[in-house]
Image (cartoon, rainbow, N blue to C red):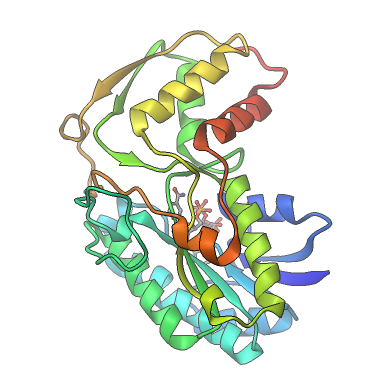
Length: 296
Ligand SMILES: NC(=O)c1ccc[n+]([C@@H]2O[C@H](COP(=O)([O-])OP(=O)(O)OC[C@H]3O[C@@H](n4cnc5c(N)ncnc54)[C@H](OP(=O)(O)O)[C@@H]3O)[C@@H](O)[C@H]2O)c1
């Protein structure tokens, strides 16, 4: 069984990786304070000790709005910190999978973004993740960078769990309808990532390295995403919730978000033969899991 060091012990993707790795890989979960991404020595020393066959960097500064007021912190974690993880992977001679984001794009593209489309992040978080991509790729060639988007799941802070929580006290919720993207289940993402890591440990093909989009299949607006969550929750006896469709202008946030950050997953399918399930099926599975045996 391969041994994979995963950074960001309690993050939603790291937790999903731990759950999905059962019987497939041994996960060494590394988090703060032992692995503080901004501390080069700690990152190198902790990863050296892990005796891993591969590294997945799932730790990141992910507070999109807060990053606007502390861009240097976001940059230190998502760029310098990611670089330290890549240095450790290079020193250990093991493959690295690093996560990035759809927020490297400005959202003006009329079709789903491909990996080689030009990047123009709209905010500090996106800029820090883009710089992270560059540094990781320059430090360690045996790297896969996965751009994912709109991640939700049974663990951690995410849109689906927020919608379910709000629906316990409201019968109408306003949700932005003019931003489009790809809802991605953390569990589906974990399955795909683990399959890729396994392959990287024995297959040195260049076509398997580099930048890949990886998201749930199909696209949605945040409002459609919310409607799907509430429709599924209703099947568990939860009260009906009305989604009021609003615009981005009606819901100002500190960070500007792309209007369309849909990602094209063709490269992943061609190189690895991997495609994530359709997003509605995964939302249903997640809601079923969270609400089984509960009544609102
Ligand atoms: N969530 C999304 O919708 C989304 C979309 C696109 C891309 N991504 C990318 O996917 C990856 C995983 O995201 P996620 O949703 O799992 O994030 P998350 O739930 O916010 O977890 C992030 C993890 O990073 C850790 N972390 C933050 N700052 C750190 C530091 N300075 N040193 C060490 N660890 C630190 C946190 O540790 P603590 O528990 O100690 O705070 C947490 O465990 C990230 O690269 C993110 O940019 C996420």
